[in-house]
Length: 377
Image 1: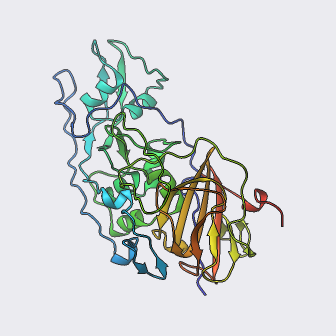
Image 2 (image 1 turned 180 degrees about the vertical axis):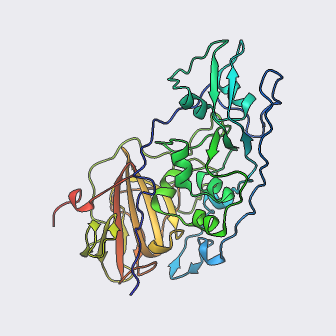
């Protein structure tokens, strides 16, 4: 009988993240590289960076599509997730530790363009607070490292896979917080030694997803002033993977049980020490699974092996619900759903012990005991 590891756990929950720094003075065009360094900047030779070879997972690691039934999960006809549809070229610029003297007319964004470092990283290194005012003659510390210039449509997961680095490490290195959406023109720091290619084990780890990865690194980077797409009303219209989907502004009402069954595993640590970030509800195969509240589908697929057929819904107010082990998915990313609407059919896919539904509620990135939020039965 298969036992599963920590499922949907917060990949970097233990990391103390500092405040996320918003866009500074807009963003450069997505295809614009940094301009040549002027003569007043130090010309220290940068270490050589050889982009790692792209790691391609086995075919059965990738979500099914086009109505396919793979691994016991009937998949809807759907566009690929952003991290597959928009691959990333690992062309990061290696920047040496240096000091920069602010010139007349410089902004923090301009300093980032001149040095190749991220404006957020420069702000953190110099304890700059919004509105990030700098003055001519001021000497700034520019932290070195590999900086990837984000292009439109790229997602955090795709960037992590391109460099063979787990997304959770990139989140920590850049002190990212809500809403975890990168922007075109942003430069993100890629942790690790730029002179050493990642091992095969590291590249494989970058392809393994959990709930936290999808919630924090699954959305594509919008272009400057690109508005979020409006949710669609039914699964026949599929939003493109590059469309940024906005969550509802607030939670409407409370939560309802996704299925009527027996709770066979509760929230929290189990007898063997493993942690369950939700509850497991035993039900017959093909039992309708209902949305616990109004919301917008953030993910529908089977990209997390342990959870099999999976639906993730954002409800507003920072709330997210998760439904796993489904045998058939009936909704698409970007689709609006109502409380009680059927979103999938139950099964025993993934690492299920029996026909059951894995159900989670999260507030932000923190798993919350669903039974404390659901009506008593």
